[in-house]
Length: 329
Image 1 (cartoon, rainbow, N blue to C red):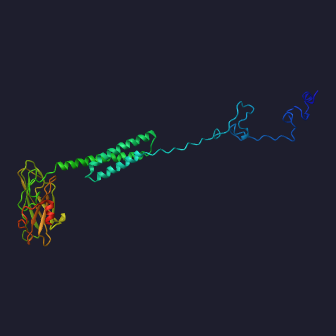
Image 2 (cartoon, rainbow, N blue to C red):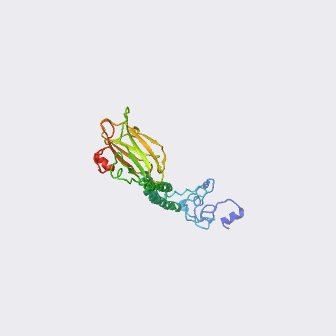
């Protein structure tokens, strides 16, 4: 009977023979351990990934109770929060920048009034380019949505404002009442000349006069409506120049009776009064009788006493703005 069989039968705690096949002393066939076997370390509380409980040397090895080889740890342990992915920057959206630039330019053009018609196509272009930019934003292929919305808003305002200003320009050009007579248009008119507008309105200036005991020079113009429609005299445009220097509007006093519409066949008088500087030899008057009427031009020679003699210095000379500038009035 061997020692191992005796141990099983008697239950004694005798140690197995060196080199025997027992398992209490270590690996079969190996030497017995020299001292007590240390206790294994206590694992930390909480769930632990199987691969994390083993060292790097155990990676890929099969252990008891595991039918498959353990894989090395490639991420945070189970139960810990996963890191959020970093946001990816959106690609640039050139259409948004173009829409904003077109909208700003359209508004600038509107402010010039004269070039307001050009604001309409610029505004439409800003709207179209802005729509393309917003489409890219919705598809996620572009950013700068605020730029696109701002460009479209500016373009829309420019289209509306440009259309209104264009209508005003066209209406002003169509409704303009031109001077049809030679005096006042082709040449400057003098005292007694009939200046006729296209709607039949006639203006005749008297010679400048200065009443006794009065320092102001007066010009009286008679307005007669010889056409079939009423003439609007609600807003006159009057400018007076003395020897080429324009007088301030506040120095020219205007009296018109009655004010408003002048019926066909009726007449009214307008009186201009102003104080001339000493030594004045010529007085020029630019006069538009009402809204939409073109300006007509008069020129008067002034005597030493401040009144006009009604004479002509250069009969038949060219008038209008160019004639007055050449005569240095």
